[in-house]
Length: 601
Image (cartoon, rainbow, N blue to C red; front, side, top):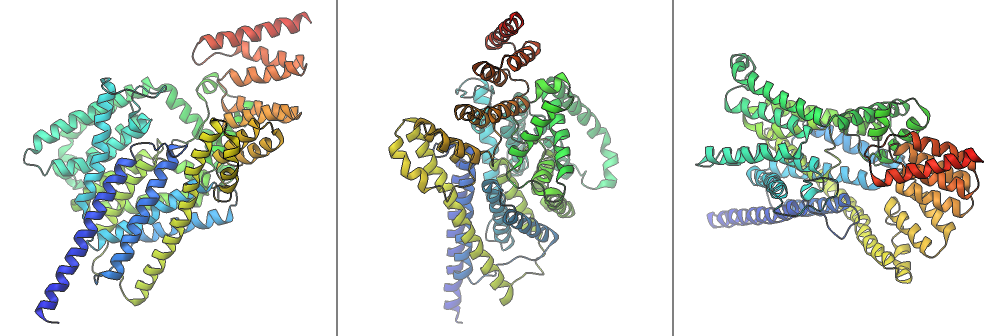
């Protein structure tokens, strides 16, 4: 090859890489922005976020395939304990979903897509195709944006749309917001510490971040902050060498004690929340012992847990405080327990093995990789106390940290790049491509479902008929689809088909609203025993609520079952409300009248 040909070849490679980097930068910035706000094109925010992650993974995959074929550079990664663990967990989730026909597919595909994304980004970081610093900016963007939003909502400069939280952020949940802020701290520290006025930037950032975490009152985020501080401070002031740590205790202990005192005061302020999580973990442990090996199926936690909770409050001895604190539960507030329920001990062990292997490798390389190490350790620890994997924006941040760590710590002296391994990589890329495209069809169907839901809400039933039935094969494990389908039949007064749709929905959820719909349909179709069973299930899932008991009492009255109505009325009058309200007072007065009426009879 002549010097001119060599120069042309080098320029071509540089142009390819620059184009690749610029495209990745723009798309990643766009996805980071989209993950902060709910799209109106989906019914649930989770679906909107996962759809965006699907698109991003597909984009990275297509660019990886193009780079593989049009660039002469190597494209592979050396084998490591992390890669092996990641591969085993991914394989297990796929096989588990194939064997378990009742699995709700949306959560399963979400985890699979995120693991595929870790593989892709790790390979790109390993081959120096992507730059680490660029992705730190995306993580910092997510965290700083949420910090600013929390401050603006606290000062009422921007309106708050939530009826539940004072400061929900753009995530509609202060816990998610606080955890994102916490996970962005290592990346922000890395960025600001490289500026000329680093002391000013770091001081201002630290003050805003601490203020945001305090007003959000998320204990989990403070626990994560503690571990991030230990790792980052260890790097900055020389605590990363264990033997020298004992000579620095005079600096660490006072800060640690102040931090623990604040965390304990926050715990006392939210004592009911802590107690309710203990109840959840207690019930969840019984579920694990019932199906320890393979669990109940990925995506099935919400359905199976609430049925178990209903059984606990309807049949077992419980305290009054447990009853008041309990309610409909969508997450276990402990990812490891939740994954043990969904995927069994095997699935939980693989998740733990991945975290341990990441932390082990990060700790061995802590002098250079303390930023991703701090993010991963915080994520792993916070997963014991809150939902992290279940929140796509939070898990997306973990995916980036994990990919950076894997790509920058894989052994460069043992690259996998011979003809056989290249064929395996190419096959893997095309299998992943086929899976993502197929999975996207389910999410595109969810976008259609949101449109159909609007039509039904407007009572344009004929217009909704065809699209409602045409998307069913693509959306078959979606509880929302069958709920909307049932509502469509109810408006047509076709209660038999509405009941069938609701029963199918209950394969994937045990939401009280769905159970109440089924109870009302059962009563309309004359199945009073089934209606009674549904009402009692809701009473167990939401043991502190008065409304389902009142609805059950009213059903008994409508059907002249005075004795059972009196029993429920006595129960209502003796219940202590979680919060006193005018509605609760009316419920109690109504129940008292039934008690008096039955006693006079």
